[in-house]
Each structure stands twice: as C-alpha cells, then as structure tokens.
Length: 472
Image (spheres, rainbow, N blue to C red):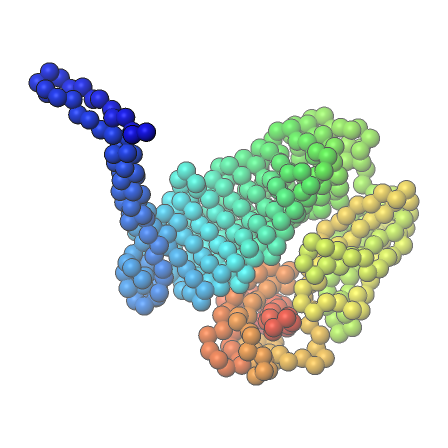
C-alpha cells in the first residue's frame, strides 16, 4: 500500500495545499536528530594530558593534546602521567578522569568540577588544595583499586569508594550533600570533620574510618551487605535506623550515637560505646542492654624475623570462652589460623598474644573473633601488616634506614615490575612510583615524609615483594 500524504492547509492566499509523505517527514526528523547529536559531540571533547609544555601549568595548551580543556570537556590523565600541577585551571572542565597507572598531584584549587573519576589498580592521585564539585551529576568516584588523598576541604554531592583496595583518605573537612557510599571492599579514611546526608553500603563490605567528628542524617545498608565503622572520632546519626535482616553492622572503635530509634533485625556487633537516645529494640539485644562481652582496648600486628606477632588487650570480659584469630590475603575472605582461651569473667586488664609463623608474602589482614560459652560470636576490628620472606629475596633496598631516598634493586630476570607502591606503617597508601626505564633499579624519594616506618611493595610477575624501610 502506498503511504498516504498529509494535507497541510495554509491561509487562503496559498491556493494549493502542501503534500508531505510519511517517508519524507520521517527522513526530515532523522536528519534533524543527526545534526543535533553531531553538534553535541563536537562541543564535548576529551583532552589528554601530555606535559609537552612546562609540565606543571593547566592553562598551557602545549600540555594537552588538543588544547586546554573547556567547560564541556573531559580532562584525561592516562597511565604513566604523574605531573605536579601548580597553576590553573582558570576555567574548570566538565570532568577530570584519572585512569589506571596515572599518579597526578594537584597543588591548585579545583572548583566546580562536575565529576572527578579515579580508577584502576596502580592509580593514585593527590589533591593538596580545595576540591568542590557542582552540577547535576556532581560526584567523586574512586574505584577498581585506585587510591586518592585529599588534604584540604572537599565539597561534593556524592562520594563513592568502590572495590577491593580502593582507598580514599580525607585529611580536611568534607561536606557531602547527598551520600557517602563505600562498598565491595572499599575503604574510606576521614581524619577531619564529616557532614553528610547519609552513609551507605549497597553491597559487599564498606569500611568507614572516622577520626574526626561526624554528623550524618541516615545510615543505610543494602541486603547482604556489611558496614564497618572504625576510628577514634564520634559519629552521630540523626534519624531512625534499622539494621535489617541480611545486613551486618560492625562498630569497632568509633563512638556512635543514634539520636532516633535503633531497630536491630540483622547482625549487629560492637566493641565500643553505642548510645541510643530513642527506642532500642529488641530490648534483649546486647547493644540495647549496653553489655559488651569483651571490652577490647588494643589489637596490633607487627612483622618480625619469625613471623607476625599479634597482640591484644581487654579491659573486661563477660562470658568469654575463647578468641579465634583469622587471616586474609584480601581483607574479605578470612580463614582461622589459631585460637586462644579467654578469661571467662574478668574486670581486670588482660593481655594476649599469638605468633603467625607462616604469614603470607605481601599484605596480611587479621581479625579477632570472640566466642561466648553459648556459641555466639563477635567480630572485632581488622588490622593489616605487610610481610616479606627475606629468604631468597630478589629485592634489595639501600640505604636502610635512610633520610632522603632509597635505591630499590631487583633481579634482572624480573622485567614485569611496572611500579613501586609506598605504604605507611598502618597499611595506608602513600604514593606510586612508575618504572620509567628498562633498568632493574630505581631511586625512591623519601624527603617530605615524616620519620617512621614505611613499606615498599613490588609486584614481580605473580609474586609480591614487600620491603620495610625506616625514614630517619
């Protein structure tokens, strides 16, 4: 059947109607859409950092492959890019994307960026100045094993730390208009004040370490998820909270206050003070009764010549049968490696220790699980420590101790080393140093670091080597 035309009637001074077929009208609409989409694609571009100019100035065209990023553009830092930017930007880009293997440092204010995306193993980013995001999709996202450190004030609508070995450290105050979401093994360290509408874990394990005062309106978990709170700061939740069936909540260090009601339907454990100013139910739950089986005051792990020494101290114990020591290579899957009998009932400080004689090469994550005589258990906080099996070592670090720098040398047969990562004595990421030459050694700077113990981590094929370094 032939398509029927449309009759479009115009005023009388047009003597004949205009005939437009279905197919013509359809082609016209498609042509208009193509023009609109083409215009949009031309107006938004990606601008890749090259550093071919002075290497430090944002607003210098030569430092980018196709000119300075504009307000509709994405500024890209790719693998191997490690500039320290000390000037600009005068006009903020739409987004900053830091890809796997990049390690830029920003010594400038980044104001009104729509999105900051930091992703990938071996990625690290340092933001020394003010960072604010603005826009309908305003967010900071750290995922897929990336690490980021923010030293000054941060303001955003949405902060996401997603995935195992994804770390975000915030030394200044942070204001989040909507939510802080940490999940699937992500870890957030908040050393300054935190003001957020909500914190949440949608899936897997979300690790929140609060060392300053924290004020949130809501605490939300997804089904099957685990939220872990730690740190030395105080956390206040303004509204009613329910720990639902299928959810696990663990509070190991931070003092936590629920200003509203607390309803516990899932699994909730704590080793520190929890205050509920509203109604707490069920009333027989240990949290609601304000009764802690064990008051833990310390849990530490230290590497030595014979393995890793674990030690912990309790201030008091109630109905405590024994402790189980569990170890993990990734901070998620734990296996029991030993048990130590408890004191039962005690109001006196008690010290315990356990030696792991066969630690893993690389990072070791330990957690303490306390068991009552009735079989109920409570999981205490996780500690992490690196370990290097010195026998047959193929990596050397000299001098050690050192003041300004160390030289790391590895076997010439190991050509798979792509970068060296530096961690502090708490296992927190400090910096990444990309391997830029084909030689089997590299100088790692230590100037600017505080005195103390640090750890250098190299990945040699399928092996991980961790070397302890003392900074004088």
